[in-house]
Each structure stands twice: as C-alpha cells, then as structure tokens.
Image 1 (cartoon, rainbow, N blue to C red):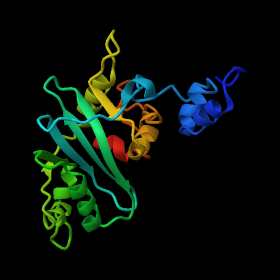
Image 2 (image 1 turned 90 degrees about the vertical axis):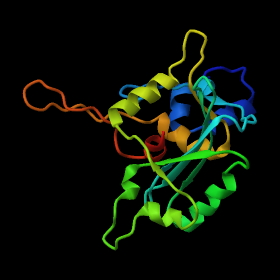
Image 3 (image 1 turned 90 degrees about the horizontal axis):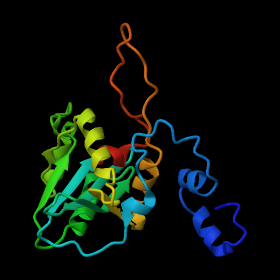
Image 4 (image 1 turned 120 degrees about the vertical axis):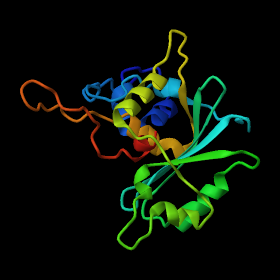
Length: 219
C-alpha cells in the first residue's frame, strides 16, 4: 500500500494505526518476521469479524489464564452446533485483584446462558498458606474447571481451527472489538522458539516463545 499514490490520506492514517507487526507486513510488505510464526495462516481480514448477537443456545465458555505482574487473560467464547468457535470478548489486565476481575466477569456473563468456566490447572495448586487461586474465585461465585493444557495438542488444534478451507471458511474467528486488540497483537507475533537438538539428531519438543503469550495460553 505504501507506494500507491492514489490512496486517500485518511485511509493511510487508518492503516498506520494498526499494530506494528501488521503495519510492517501489510503496509510496507516487510515479511522478514514471518518465518517461525506458530500460526502463519492467521489473516486479520478472515479471522476478525463484525460482532453479531450470538444465540443463547450456543455452547458458551469463559477461559482463564492467571497472571498478576504478567497479564491476566480471560476469553469469552461460544461454539455453534457445527463446532465453529467465536471469541467475542476478553479481559486483559495486569496487577488486578481477583475481586475486581470477578466483578468484571459477572458483568460480562449473559443472562439465561449456561457458561462453562475453564482455567489452567495450575490455579488448583495449593499455595504455602493453604489457599488456591481457584478457591479465591469461589468466594465470588465463580468455579473454574481444569482445562486440558497439552501444548502439542493445543498448537495443532488452534492451527487447524484457524486454517481456512477452499471457501475461506475457518472454525475459529474473533469479534472485531477494541478489547480484542491484545489478542490480535499476540497472535501475529507468536513464534516458535529456535529449535535446539538433544542427544544425537533427535529434535527436542517445539514450543512457542514464552513472552507476550497470555491470550495465546487461553486460546
């Protein structure tokens, strides 16, 4: 786009307001950072969709990745009867108490809808004082179930859900709303660690770089 003299200035300004990685790729056509992405199939134009009113009979989920200094990420999603998943809202905060997070979660829950609450199993771990993160949430009426957090299966499943078919249909999309911006920033810069080798020529397990991945852990 950057070498097109016919684009109106306000359109260029809008493009340049997008996340830095997106601007490098889609405005300046710089794909140097594309190699090594966990989800290279991600396409902002395909995977971010206009919000719409999700029916109450969809399967609704609230998914939690605990953090304090690192961000807490809480995704709100719903799946239709074919299994297509719509991530429609998110909480993404640092240094926020569970009491405040619980109030925000309650404020986002849809009336008359049964929600399934899933979280990293680590919140069930008993701390030195005998408490658990899950127990703190229970004081505010929210009961988390341990999610399956096998990394190998998770990378594969999310990649399959993001991959469009020949009709550009994919099973995972996100509502294009401001609160989803941290997720957009993470997914377009989510990369594999540089592959190392163990004994002989056997490669070690591939995993993503553990930086700026809080929403990705939720996903």
